[in-house]
Image (cartoon, rainbow, N blue to C red; front, side, top):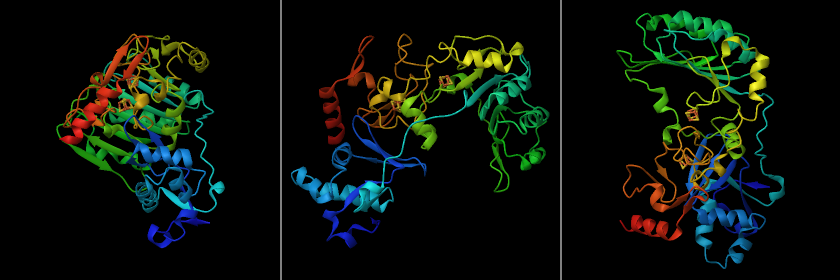
Length: 390
Ligand code: SF4
Ligand code: SF4
């Protein structure tokens, strides 16, 4: 039986019950604290490492036995932990724990490539993007992002829609610069589209946002902002975190930016990411068979298996399965396991740059080419002590 009641209703029998997280609510430990990820409902809660350790070690025991096994040192804390997660619908009390097996976190996708990033300059085209879209559909690519350095006009957007109609490409995001010809009233052709999710026009004279009816997921955003794709790519901030099943399982085993990704640079060269130096030919004369051959090349896949658990510092970070990695801008370009350079979070003291008490990761340990980053527990304890005292 499952009990989702409040603790006060179960008080008399609580010690005979088991506490379990729902199988989609998964605790992930960081160096200093943990997060419970709800990968089906896209939410998360920060919590303490101590109680996550107790939960993991004693999940086969009823609550009363756990209190006994931990020497009754944490009885109140353990109960508070369980009550909090049951009240927030992250877990349950049950007398049948065997009926709640853990969720598989293996990440199997039948397609050779799942997403593509196409850089282009529509003011000075160097490759045939429509030929590329055809090839991508031939190999069942599902999502594309187009970053235009020019000013994409409506006709071009309509051609993209025509080309991808009935294709495998179901998710299209376009970033481009404002063009006077793209009047707000001209976007109603997107009403019937269900492939384009977002179009961003930068350097617009105004800020605006067009949304369509409820069934249509498209957004058209006009922004006065200037976009610098190269500098903005790989920026790690809490605003980019996403909690979902796909990202979680992919991040556990693979590189969550470059795995099953291809990119085309604005020159038309085939690359894993537009900021990586290694090029794999020009797309203009390629067929989908050539494209598959490149994708199957070990050199092309060299970053694909670098999961967050293998990356310096990230492996100690509680956000590691919701945070997109970057293998191009890294702190030590000579070490492919180095921490993303554009990360401003320090998981050893749980502070973002700009927050009171923040110090860079480098002050929390030592770095060596052979050893990678080695946290210094004494230094970290002192820093945390100072933060708590302030
Ligand atoms: S250390 Fe930074 S880049 Fe690494 S997982 Fe944490 S937030 Fe992301
Ligand atoms: S590896 Fe870095 S630069 Fe390349 S696409 Fe990913 S985030 Fe962007």
